[in-house]
Length: 344
Ligand code: NDP
Image (cartoon, rainbow, N blue to C red; front, side, top):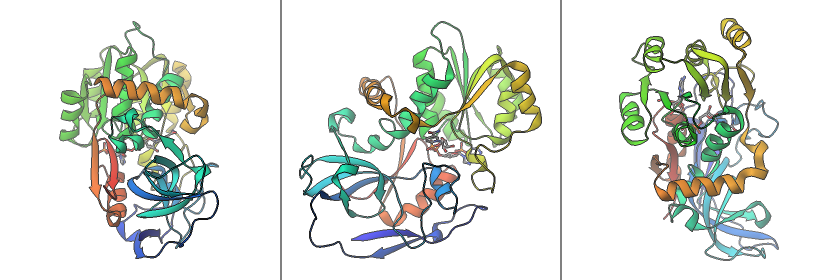
C-alpha cells in the first residue's frame, strides 16, 4: 500500500509538490470490531487544504495536517471488508477525512454509504458536482444570494471555471438570474464557460481590463456576486454592484498563500461601497447546512442526470501525483473539479 505525507508547514508562500512525500507501508492485518477496509477510488484536492498546511488553520472545523502523518481530505472508495454492521463488501462510501492512501482501515461510523445511481455511476462526481463543491455552490446561492425568478438579476462569479464556480453560475441561471458572468484565468476557461456551461459572458482576469469588461457585460450593474477569490477581482466587482445587492462570501483563494486571517481584511474603499450601497456580505460555510444536504444532493443529482447542469472535471492519475495536482489546482491548472484517480 502507498500513503502520502505532508512534511512542510508555513503561512506564507505557494505550496510546492515537494511538500508531499510518498511512502510504502503495510496495513494492519486484521479488522477490529466497527472497522472497515476500503480501497480508494478517487481523492479530492481543495483550496481549504492550504490552510491545513498552517499550524493554525484559522477555522474551528479544520485541523492542521501534522508533519509525517498521512494527509487526508475528501475521498470516495469501495468497501473490501467490513466489521461494521451498516456496510458490506462492494459498497461505495465517502468521507471528509479519507486518508491519502491506496487503502485504508476506517471506522464504519465515519463513512457515508452512497447510491451510485445518484451519479449514474460517475463516482468522482460525489467529490464535486454531486458532492461538497456542488453543495457549496447550490447552498451558497440559495442561502446568501437572494436570487429571485423574474427579478432580472445579474450574477457575477469569480473563480468561475473551478469546481464551485462552474456549478454556482449554472445554479444561478437555473434559479432565475437573467445574466451570468464568469471571471476566470484563461481563454480556454472563458470558452468553456460560455460555450459549454451556459454563462452569458466571461472575463479573463489575466488578460482583460476587468473594470471595462464588467461595465460592458453588466450594463444594469451587478446584483449578486459569488466570490471565490477575494482581492483585486472582488474589489472590481463590488465597485459595480447595485444597492441592496448580495455577496456570497464563499472563499478568498487569492489570499490563501498569505499570513492573513479569514476572511482577509477588505480594501477600505470596498468596505465603504458595501456600507453605502447596503450590500450584504455574510460569511458562508457549507458545513453549517448539514440538515439541508440530502435534499440539496438530490437536486444536484437530478439536474446533472437530466443534463441541465453540466459537469467539468480535471482528472490526474495516481496517488503519487496528489501533491502536483494540489499545487496545480491552487494555480489554476484545473477546469471544473480537480480529481485524483487512485484505482479503477
Ligand atoms: P477551484 O476548483 O475553483 O480551484 C481553485 C481556482 O482558484 C483555480 O483553478 C484558479 O482558477 C483560482 N485561483 C487561484 N489563485 C487565484 C488568484 N490569485 N486569483 C484569482 N483566482 C485564483 O476550487 P474550489 O471550487 O474547490 O474552491 C473555490 C473557492 O471556494 C475557494 O476559495 C474555496 O476556499 C471556497 N470553498 C468554500 C467553501 C465554503 O463552505 N465556504 C467550501 C468549498 C470551497 P483561475 O485559473 O481562474 O485563476
